[in-house]
Image (cartoon, rainbow, N blue to C red; front, side):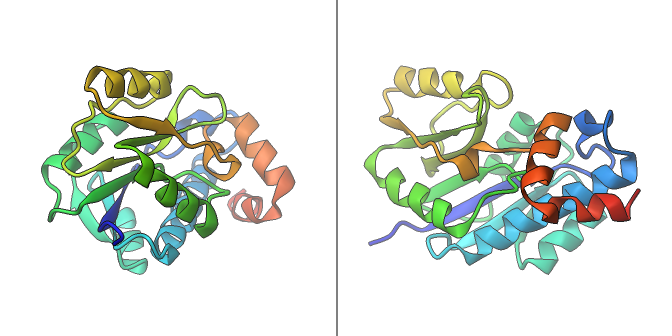
Length: 209
């Protein structure tokens, strides 16, 4: 029988959206891109048959609340800053008890239902499944039983830190690599690469120029 699995998605405020893209995009362009990326991820999660609930973790931003409602997502409000602190708050305030959690970034422009299905099927083989970014440095997604016993770490070097933490806690772990999950969008180089290969990501930027 399939495990009851919820997705947990922290989405940054518009004010802090994609600040690392400032050399290439103005504030309005970054905000539009941020919302488009989050919309794509939420729509994909809601279409995944292996997920039973999608929860947005929102830093008290009305625009993000509207987005959560648009995609019929539950919502956890927090004042915490930073991905790790946001996740830790959300885990302490989870509205229920799933069997399994998918922690996933909101800036994955190439994610689709097929790769999510593959990830969640692969996750049955071990306690912890870690999805690295394209540099094998950060962590773009992670699947864990609930309650989460793995100490979390996000940002640079978090992939290796998650492996170390799993081993230290004697949790079985596996790495799941997929190009559609590896490509997050953080830097101007990321944006230009994605926009070059998919015009969909250029449109909101040109409209907000």
